[in-house]
Length: 102
Image (cartoon, rainbow, N blue to C red; front, side, top):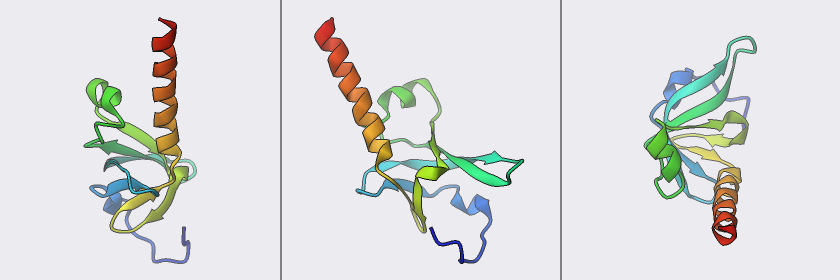
């Protein structure tokens, strides 16, 4: 990410949609996780989640937190790397493996 841009209020992130770098919608930023000692954003709290990716999380919680280190770009939308999709795929693979064992 560009560090030479004009600083913005972190609250401007709230309400922006979050997508993976391959174009998969993850959710909308509802809040931010901050490290007050380091004075930096450490995570994005998402709500309005993509039901296909986060069905279990959407049913049992208000949202999910995406680590800020996954963020690749911030503009009108936020782009995160595809680790989010890999994490979801790992869940699916684990569920499939458990079904085969049962």
